[in-house]
Image (cartoon, rainbow, N blue to C red; front, side, top):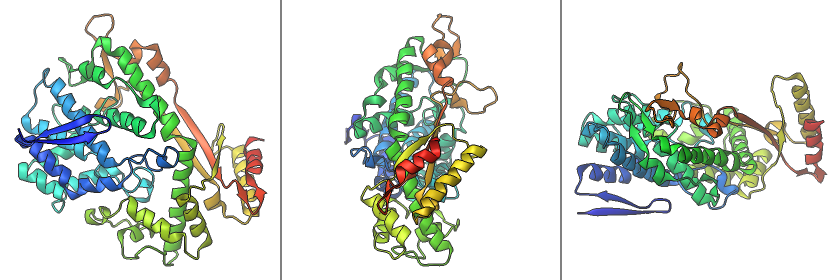
Length: 437
């Protein structure tokens, strides 16, 4: 057997057998330039500024998702065999599901017209890309089939749930990987036990959990809850993300006013994004990665525009804004509006523009979303065999008080971000007073 071994910090060895056509196809996809580009995109955006080990890439995550998806298939194929081409498509979809991510993953997605899922589909279906060529060489129908798996439009439908559901290979990998790389232990759960307890329902098109899998599912959902609260929504992470958006907004404002943005070649795709143009094609989009944005930030630290220079310098040198959590924030509440105006006046009185020096973030999540009969999202529920032994399937929230509490615990965290000190004046106390009086 001709093996290709990939050392992985989470899964140890990821093994491809190059004598197997499916594995040979995956190996060719891994080498495609669109997948290799993911090495230049951080998996968790600006989180490395709070957790210095969190420097890992979308590439390593994609490799992990591919590995776990293959293990899903090994387990579930015992219950219900699927068409060989669909089986290959699921593995390819796992590897390619994030190929459409832009710089710093989710952080600057709002600068683009479409979300990364849309770009993923475009890249897979664009005949000019290497991933399309590799897929089409295997089977002309494969590019569309892979895109359909990612979107959940295949029959039977359960294989697509391996890629996107509340119990999928994507979540399994990013929780374990982000936990391991950041040094935060909250994301650890029993992957091996969970995989062993999965099966395909005999009566409908679902991936379900055996009745004795309740405790592993509880731990998994607890891990997800903790990772969002402690890592993804960490105050330093959200401050850095807000500042990155602010510095890009400043550059965009300059570009839209017709001025040259230093460090950015004006005909380039990045310059067009800053100028508000939405005419990027796939070739343009694939030129964008973290290095493009970091190169621009470095150039902006030496530019004449004071705001752009200061904000870029703060980000690159980790002189981040302080944060203040605003309780019961409501943009439409008159009292809150008055407090915002008061805070903006305080910032303006220091000579700073509140558009860039008084920032806000809204972090919200529901740890587990229960079954919704009006939803057409098949993977929106985790189904488990009834612990009563009847063989009936129930929403996991109905089998666990812990998970039921998660469904009733949606939360929103509003934060304000601002410089700690300006021109020798302490701004923090004044702004905290404006928001908490």
